[in-house]
Length: 76
Image (cartoon, rainbow, N blue to C red; front, top):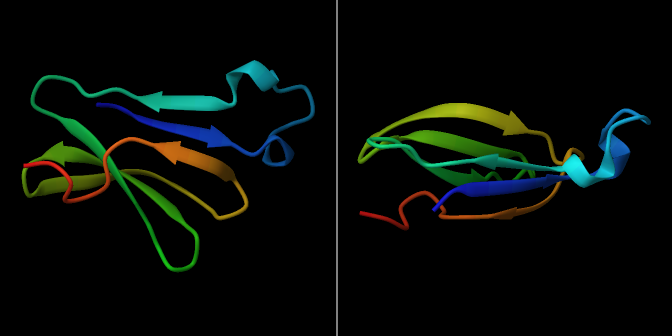
């Protein structure tokens, strides 16, 4: 499964297409995307396999609206 992040419209430039507010991080062979949220509201997208994860991107609490996908540790 991929991770899909919907950004808040207010965090984007005025001319940014509203239809493109969702960003997808698609799993590829050997690499999986997962996410976690920190107590501060920061959204962390991780890429890796098994125990080898690295941070792909982080979104501040005022940048994202919703997220779908697997959380860290939800897959083998």
